[in-house]
Length: 112
Image (cartoon, rainbow, N blue to C red):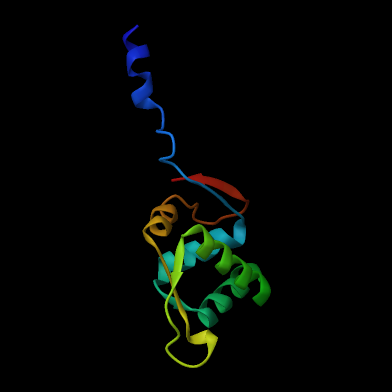
């Protein structure tokens, strides 16, 4: 019966975990930012085009999704062109990067 008393401490606290439903391209984007640090859009697009043959529209969609989820942040552009804008992982993004498989192959749900 002592295990029943400990059960609430073993269960995750309500509201303390967040759900992140990431497809393969999103996972590769987080892995790339974790590997190289802050990157420009041009570099991210080139990396994802080489890894997954991703189109520019898919890269932009993934960047906007991850920014909305709070996993990455963008800095102000250094120049006049949007390509000069740099993207970096937030604290939650870095935590999630530690949970990613080495080579993402399927959509996955992560709990942080």
